[in-house]
Image (cartoon, rainbow, N blue to C red; front, side):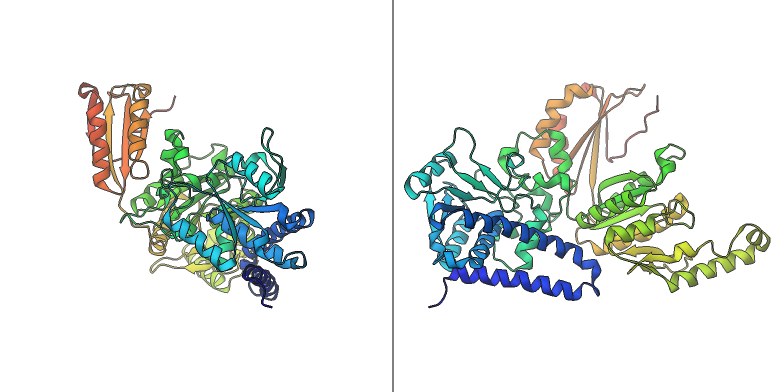
Length: 541
């Protein structure tokens, strides 16, 4: 007799996981740079399966239920549970033994309902629809079906996710049952990695700009995915750092109480952003002024490239490697500045290799380029070169992360170094600026959302910033995701006390927000309206 469809699907997923593990082991030596992500995914799957199998041993099939609302987390959970059941199918005759609980929303998206029906038909799910709240719904399942444990798709970044563990008894005051969280420690990227790697169907709303689904009344498209033409990138292209996991729920109405600064800042975190890493003890100790960062931010912004992160760290390999590892996986590009020279404290090249998980390799091409530079230098100043230079000065610069490209512009003598999406620039300002122009153009060509034009306006007024707080919050809320609003207080002898800058990709929206502010700020307090976003420098105390 043919197996139940859900058992078949679970068995197929088990085989797919095992097959990927075999393939990764075979390719590990040839493709070491790609194994890190896959290894992480396999570890997540194994940990989730261990939790599921432990639960399946503890409870009888009729004593368990799975919460399934058609969302991405619930879809991952459903397939993992089906795989767990397939691995222990001697105790299971049919997937219908496991109740799937769906808490209905009166304003549910039609696309979600359609997806749930598709899953129900394909896997013969026994879906129990409840129109009550969660607490009453759980009581109903316990009283009428004898449910003792619920599989839930909760993750640590979810509201209250930090209060539970993989096995957590119900909260005091609730009916007694066990909550089981197989994907508790998964991140947003893990969810999409699983769905995409194993070709698992999901609700089509996620391809239309939605990153977290509730009902129509409390769910919008995530403006972090909004493009200049008004379209939206699919959910899987949203890149979030460790500290930004909650931002997948940014378009859910229950987060409307988030502070203006948080909402305003969130518009920076777009899939097509870059991160800057300045490296050098001399910057952190104040021995030199860091002009590179401001120069890079201004130049990239002018190209329509969003800078989402700026980090200054000392000359320590592990710190640099950790930053490169995190930023390169969450941003379209990373630019490092400093630490690529020949001295003992130039550690960036090695750190980038560690961060990307690749070996260091001698570059014959770099050796030839540096040999030509040294020969030219010797020719220009033979005496100085012989008196102070060693023939091994530049050997350290020839050891590069495996896969590094040497991008040499016509007429230039030293190449721009790029390994995957990491651009390694020198720290000396005049050389950094030369290579920044090259790197900026390369990044612009590779990023589908670069090359945007930002429009900025500013209002200078004599009101103290605290008197503008409520007004700015109101305007920021109305134009969230469309216009970034920043206010900057001035305490010197300027003819203004606050400058408000409005900036966005759509000039019409910027003008609308400007008019809204001008209608509410007393005319006599406005000293100027500027058609740019640059701010006057304030003197240091």
